[in-house]
Length: 450
Image 1 (tube, rainbow, N blue to C red):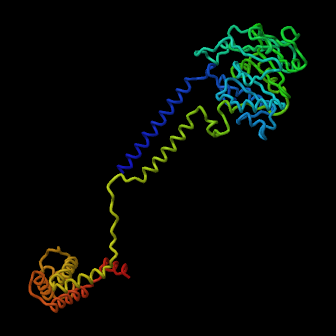
Image 2 (cartoon, rainbow, N blue to C red; image 1 turned 90 degrees about the horizontal axis):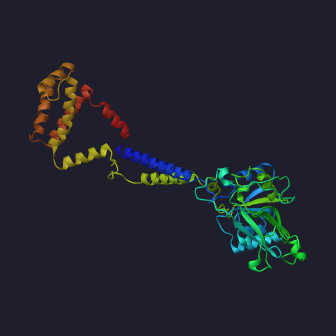
Image 3 (cartoon, one colour; image 1 turned 90 degrees about the vertical axis):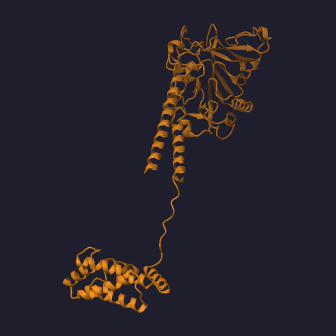
């Protein structure tokens, strides 16, 4: 019991420490919060920088949306056959490799639509559009102490922007509210020297660069801009299109409900037909990650589960250990009582210990006679014999003489085997006369030996 109490107390202490550790860890994660400086642009993320609200709205409003959790070069395979629009938002946790970039551009060239929403888009994802290329410039950087949930801080000194021209991307959009950290996109003519590259809203006339038919077909179109530059640009690439938005705040949880930001976000991803896929692979939510672990990511549930498994294994391991000295197995005497009696008789006969044989039988007979007479075992022979004679037909003198002869033999008087047998026979006759030979214990042992 003492050992079990020690084990129970140890388990209670361990469980308490695990609970305390997980509580401290969970509180620490809560204090960290969400940051615009290191934003999480995943559609699983419900924080201010996540896209969970936008994704759930598209899903519940009947649009075909999914989370793309494979490498982008798989878009050219069977799994990407139904995907028509791929949405990549913000600085991804995993960078695009050369192979993934090449596969993505080939997919766009075959008719795919890439929606790239970022303040500093990866240049490999922005191929030249004919003789034009797109460069992004971020006017302001978010500080470390910025509260991403405070829309006033996010839009401080920012004026709502109106569309430059009516288009499919700006339909039903009156004005949008970007953040003060929104990047501005510049269209740079690639044929001009580096020193002469300048921002152009969209190509109108061949003033800076000679425009041919191919150049006009691939010229980027600016949809929303201000005096600092363009915010929304799209252009044709092969048989597909690339749409670039310079501020993830417009589609994120903390900014999508401002002005017509939601309407613009919907126009961006539903511009074409088919399935809309949000890139979760480069947000660290690849298909190789366990679904259960992904669901509980960022919570102490996984850690608690792992610790409980370790605790169960520890209990199983300790259950097989010995906490005290080894206890010998119980020795069961498999010999019968008859074998014991036969062995003792043979030993006494060989050693001529007739007095010991008489002593073994007389001791039991005297104890039975004392109980029958109602006296103490140590009472005198005469008292035992007289009391027995009063309650039976046995002669007191004869019984006393028999008892005296037995005691003299036990005390060392010379005797032979014949005399010892005669004494034992007379003792058994006394027991039989008094009906004392078969006691309850004798009867029970006799039944067990059958």
